[in-house]
Image (cartoon, rainbow, N blue to C red; front, side, top):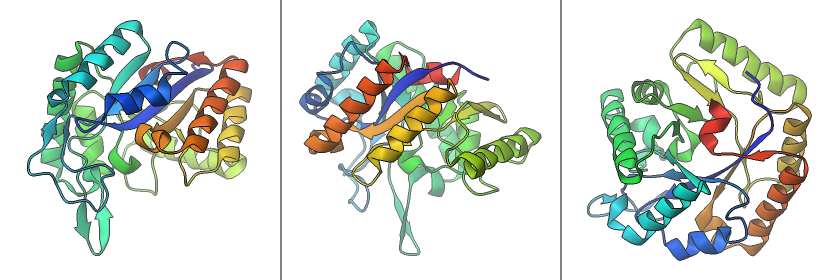
Length: 270
């Protein structure tokens, strides 16, 4: 499946605790030029940033932050933004000294019910279909895959080591493509991969711990192959880091100059 050069900005962790003025400050230079695909937590369970933080007394539903919801609705109506599902509450659990992300520790049955509920909740609030799932901490196992397939969602992310997807012929084929491409090019397979009943697509993170030059090389790689390019960021990190924020602006400008078409994340997976 080759969908052409589409550019998607994937911004994770939007939730009831998000301050609209921070989001607006980060993207005011980009509104109308690109579509920002916000990965939204429907019922946030801990303060930002999430890892190693005590849970809130009770989960906060997104619509408790009415200013944020209203502004997102305006952006969606203009097609300046889109919405994906980013877990359910984004809670971690400590096991063996490690912080396990939500879609690694919750039982399958709970993940299925919460994923279906989270998708339905976001669709009700925004009046639009939700097509894509973004795993908290970009980590998901077999139970999480069962959940997103039950909810009819595609995945922004790619498989890791063997065995983290339910066994199938499509999984074996996708695994060979994903790791074969990585072995010979240094980059993940750049087109959507069919795994079971969902599609998966690689993303490229630009955070304070990632390489700006590697992201630019990934952009050039996707350009040469006429493949989608998904840039994954966090609004709260960009708001507090001028250097990182301007790197995002530079990558977007370069992508547009190369002829990438600004698109919602879901259109990169269709």
